[in-house]
Amino acid sequence: MITNDNISEIRLAFPALNQQVNNRQLVYFDNAATTLKPKVVSEAIAGYYNTINSNVHRGVHHLSQQATYAFENARKSVQQFINAGNSNEIIFTKGTTDAINLVAHSFGKKFINEGDEIIISQMEHHANIVPWQTVCEEKGAKLKVIPVTEKGELILDEYENLFTGKTKIVSVTHISNVLGTINPIKKIIETAHKYNVPVMIDGAQGIVHEKIDVQDLDCDFYCFSGHKIYGPMGTGVLYGKEDWLEKLPPYQTGGEMIKNVTFEKTTFNELPFKFEAGTPNVGGAVGLEAALAFVSHTGLDEIFNHEKELLEYGTEKLSEIEGLKIYGTAANKSGVISFLLDGIHQYDAGTILDQLGIAVRTGNHCAQPLIKSLGIQGTVRASFALYNTSEEIDIFAKAILKVKEMLG
Image (cartoon, rainbow, N blue to C red; front, side):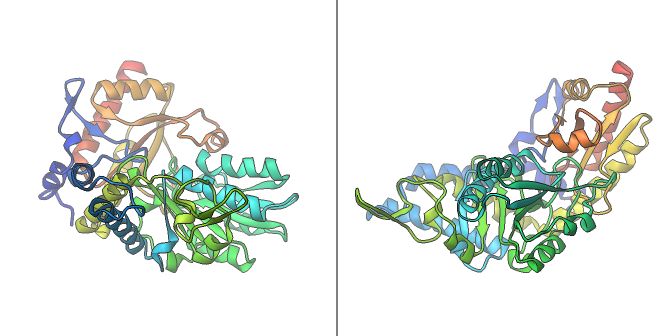
């Protein structure tokens, strides 16, 4: 359990927390954008580069074999973390955006034709809108959108009404990066499968806020970024059911993903290498493995419960501030609070909060269609992680009052 007694020990594992910003102790509430990294992650990456740094899968010498073992062991660790059936179903990517583009490009190339339909939701990040939009434009297909209630919940009756004989794939976010809404993805998947339609889940926010079991969910694809779950930037994972990954054509071509090349014809490698063209980010994979081990050791349930307590406390504290409106009040929500102050632009509020040592995110959060549907230009977003405390929320609430005093 994460308590006031052991939170100090947890915070010591994150060197970035031990600094001042504008002569004030840093309060880091920008975790939905990227989490800070524990020392074990940077140590794991440095350990790889300082010792066994070598290219993988290609060398007979000792360092190459050690690097290959480390890389493939990281793949197995990811498989176990999300309970995939086979390590061949784990594709290393640069992140969630890269993974969604992989599926959109490869699936669209083979399975999307003129007049076909793709379903997404109104609360998607641009990374889960633009790739599918591009496929629709290229193929003459249609993008259909699940609407959202005022509370920030998907209207599931409307979702089912979107299905026709032309529906080819559903791609939705697990958790909204703006509203914090935790979507009922298992139900979403069950509905789609009733119509024999595969489902991709954007798990960029989901991976760090809920225990993921891809076999239990029965999703066809699930993707996430390493840097959202205390791992290195430039790393990510695409999980895909083996039968789907076998059907899809390669996303990128070049080295590593080939089996045989002649000037007349190229045959492609087996899974998972078919989708991993070029030299992989081996050090990043090792760092991601260290991050997942850190999260598992800390305890997933303990982290989730701690974040829930912070969300409840933060919502209570901010709701007491006159003129503050919270956007996203779903019944099932993660540790994200997006808000606006009456008469104060979100950028101005964020700038003053930074002067007070508090890191938050401002703007449209790469979700312009959702923000527009709310009738606003953007929000201030505070998002919590395992190392945050209720005392920091108290500091935050006082800082908001200072913002009102200065700008209101």
